[in-house]
Image: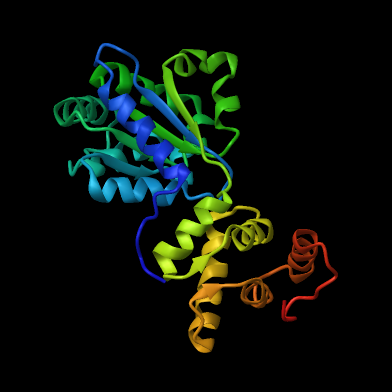
Length: 258
């Protein structure tokens, strides 16, 4: 399997959100939310963007909830600035370097930040004083967390939201071709989507197995039989078998030829 990013619908929505925030005038609020269930490729998308565009990326650590100074230190290190370990001096330095940089700041695993009022209020201060786009990346409940009465001043600054969805069958077709050089008709792609519930990580895991099967058998196309055999090596075989039966409408068992 190739190590590259595939332009799925989720990635396109991600890029559109970031572009919109960057293009807004600095006088406007420019906070954004990228949300969705785990396993849909949010972190992969932001890491790809970070590797290819001017921006700052930090991952919220669980220890941040015990120390706002640690959050400031980690963000300053993202700007390649040595922190002093004191809240007052570090927040002022962070505002200064962020304002000078003018690039977007991504905070991954942001549910940890939102659950602690002091952390998210500090991020709001950074947004208001430095006037930079700040994108929080978190689980699907992050919006509900931000709608708490005490956090409404933060929520009111969110001007762009994009929710990652399960991969579509068309996405899976594209992923199979781009990453594995394997053709995949829409029905087989729909079967993969059913088995993996559209989960980005599970689809990749299944395709790795399917690629090995195709290479061993010198096959250049994903078939139902190949997908079922690949699925048989994944966790929860009973659930996978049920998904295969539902998709095929037959009592076929995993590993049987189509």
